[in-house]
Image (cartoon, rainbow, N blue to C red; front, side, top):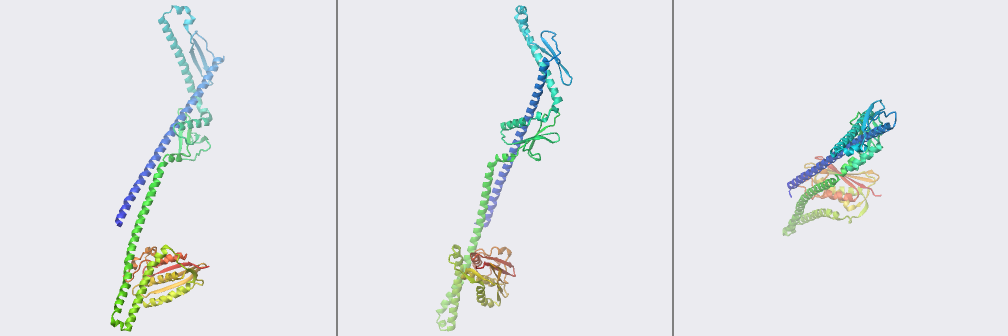
Length: 511
């Protein structure tokens, strides 16, 4: 699959997932807003109902109070001053605490036909009905006037005395809590709440135990007794309001989580696809390089074998010796290339073939440097070895540790600058009482910063090092990294393009 197709799929799927997440979040936000609006509307309706209930309770209080005054005045001589001008009416007056006198007239329910049996016998049926109708009208009128006067007196008492009543009597805390709880429950809100009664200056007159007056948001307020000069307010807050609202829309949260999981899986899959494509390209390059590397020594050996069949060559000891040396060198080169390919495959599966022993790193470094000296001097360069480490005993596999040092020096020679003599150096020193450091430096072409993190990956080859006269598989540094890790050490690289590179190996010392 082409990269352009993968990128196109990635962009389309990312936009799809992004749009899906956006609409889900918008839906969740709108649901929360709608729930909050419904919650607020229900609460304000319950508060308004509570306010009306308290008004009715106060009206009932004054009504009962005035009825008691009137009833008591009917039986006390100092308050009842009425007389009976006729047999059918009762007149009386009531004096209030402020000196106001109110006159009342009550029509007695008297059945005239009983008082005058003679008239009853003489009256016609029509006259009797008309009389009864008039009597009923008089009774209803008298009752209406009495109740109207009573209500007027109650209203005057409310306007005159309601504001002077203590707030604990006008809005009893237990009464408010019980009625408000009942109203909220009837409207489907079974949420704990706290409330307070405040004055016009927002000073708290009394509050429930858990009420927080410093809470700015989430407080619902309703004026009590709005038809009087009272400025009392009922304030209610819901500590668990947020949890209640989100609990009603929590079914959306799993869908968001699943969408995010799908998005992460998709992105991870795309990342794996890019890595797999890159690995495939590296393997293709590896196969091409391996074919070229193996083809050259095989062709040289084949040519030397053909020349050996020539009789003139067989008669010349010098030519025979030369061809024999060529065959030996090319065979050695071929074997070395095959071993490099097999090294990573063997240790990718298991490291059980390693033979650990305590060896002196200084001696191995000196031996490899001595062997490599001839190769460096061939290009007119030099190599220096400084073993400053006083304690260089490490627990490693001697053969593979030797290969590590050899691979680093071999890369330094391969990637030297053209028309510049190579100068290599290798040093050892003690970092502390438990760690050995080995540095391999050169003055080669260097490595770009963006390539430093990738040079230890299998099959990876730096683009600037892909020179026509240098062939490789991209396995050397990967092998070095693998073995150093098995030896419980670490390796890093420092480089500057055009000035050279330094590889730093740290290994734990043997006890």
